[in-house]
Length: 315
Image 1 (cartoon, one colour):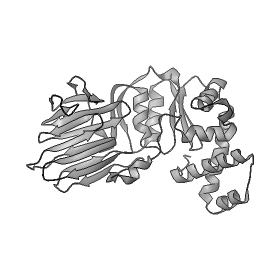
Image 2 (cartoon, rainbow, N blue to C red; image 1 turned 120 degrees about the vertical axis):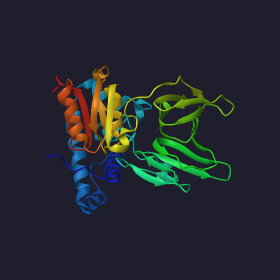
Image 3 (spheres, rainbow, N blue to C red; image 1 turned 180 degrees about the horizontal axis):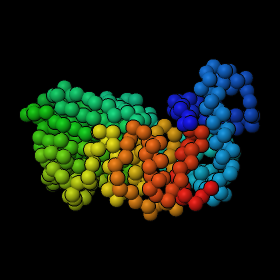
Image 4 (cartoon, rainbow, N blue to C red; image 1 turned 45 degrees about the horizontal axis):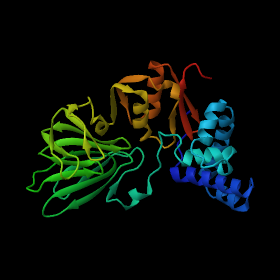
């Protein structure tokens, strides 16, 4: 039976308690007992964290070292035991997972894990905000501006004399009466056009490049990549699907991670695997099962706190 995921704030609170006790050299406190008694989910999170520690102790030495040492600033500050696991989780050493960043709380519009949010702007343009995404809106007499801070958006622009522009730290994209998607992540920004065209520009003084329906372009740090054929199903996420066309397994799992509360990690030995097919984003457990049936991989879940994808030969 699949265990129900716990709210992120409860999991984080359990981790915070473990870090606090470890710093004090204690294993228990009256305050902790009060917290555990105040909500059954608190005790459940605490028990899962303890179970994760037992599973973690059985990992191969090399994988334990990666989790505990990867971002330790110095040996004297390096945490141990459960506190080390807690810090690994909260610092995002399992790279597929991101907590809701604090800046998103100040955004005009933001979405959480697994949430696709529909927004109607004042000009009647339609915006779909992908999971773990946030945007700011700045409409004035001269233009309609959407500032993409993180994540992905699907946009259907309404007719209006003012230009409609999506801007990220990597550049700007001016709609030419169109339907398009923009994704912003650590690798930069990526534009894919479904209808009509979009004028992409890196630096404000740079030349605009027209990207037409069925095409895409990458923007990074003010530089434009070449215009390429668009990936199939770039907007499939708006229909609750993930469409992969010979994509690295790592990219597929990274997309799934936006729909999962617990961290999702990939064994480096599987970095070369590639995936093709259509997969559900509404039931990521079933999608992982489908991937495991088609690829030489095994999916291991640790009490709903962490999921690993490892070679099928690993036990």
